[in-house]
Image (tube, rainbow, N blue to C red; front, side, top):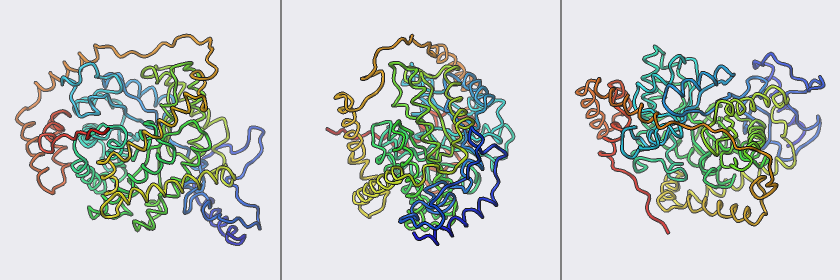
Length: 557
């Protein structure tokens, strides 16, 4: 790009920056030196390829979505939490919000994630252990008691039974008197990554996509602020993928959901802003920053060129980041504070929109109040003390970071081409479905995970406290233990709830939902009626399993 074009771009950025709202904050260094809100090539200098880097707030968004960077608004501190029953988790949420958390992120227990009630035989011993138990809308009422849902953004990490759980959230909001059109937050709902990595599905892909399409339509019409899909790369990376695989598989899944929305006749400029993303921030600092920058650039280009998006917000890739759980070690766990801080800083320098920082003890158990506070304070130290919020994309133009960004982008494009080749019609969706059926994704993730493990065991890759610097003075940690009484109490409350409700109304509502499932009608209103009648998650998912069957992964050798 020649000097005149660069100068014109800087002037465009300056006009947008001047017109944007900025925080009332000190944007100087620790020594009191004023810094510019963005940096670029020297005045009068040419910079070949600068159109791929650009300025914050304009296509291709490599340097961020907003001309102000974090001077306009910092990222949302959204700590992932959930354990035991709804009352216990409600207390943790209130603690997080009182300590400065900007939004809530719900972790569900394994029975809930699998669409089962707490009293089912398969749930025995799992209730409340890896998240909060939610059996019906009554639990959701307790979970958010004293927390006005109309005023708090809420993220829910659940995919297989995401739609009925979301309906429970909507009913809880209704009972609070909220205007549903004002609700804001994110539902994960990403079923593709379940078949690729996490394996928490209920049905075959097609019925899940039917429900997701219904949800996209319903939210677009009734709850325009809410994001019905958070396309998740986090679990793909945690399963052992490389950074480029995480990026490519995640964005391919996102393209698949764009194709789903278009197949429903939705306007890409209206529904695309409702898609958000969820990435892992691993411990290789610069590689992660490059991954986040490449993600925005790839998404904007494909949405514009392949899917016809024309509005700015439809081209924006908004993403939440969580530090890498798989990087945490049970050995010398206090070292995890350092790992988490480095990973969080990479997410911030990569321009994340919201962030969760893992607690030091999460490789051993759910976090204690103390470790959860340390994780929260990690974000606040980065935000308030380091000065990294003063400048948009401060590493932009770094030879190393730009080369890494280009390399990861090129690797991702090669993977997109392979996925399209897998399908029968050249679409991303067909390629994803064929890749799931053939085990293509899981095989490539397994190869990457095996290669890393070999490097670790040979000592080529180092993990402090595991295969390097093993001696320690650290003492054993006190960890959070969820009492078996949580499960007993949850089962008793569920039994009482089933006794007290109108069984005839529940039965009729479930039958109506199944009848709608056999038509092309949107299923969300019928599911909401079942939830209002206090039908349980297990009952809703159970009748749909009877209708659609249960998906079982084909054996592979």
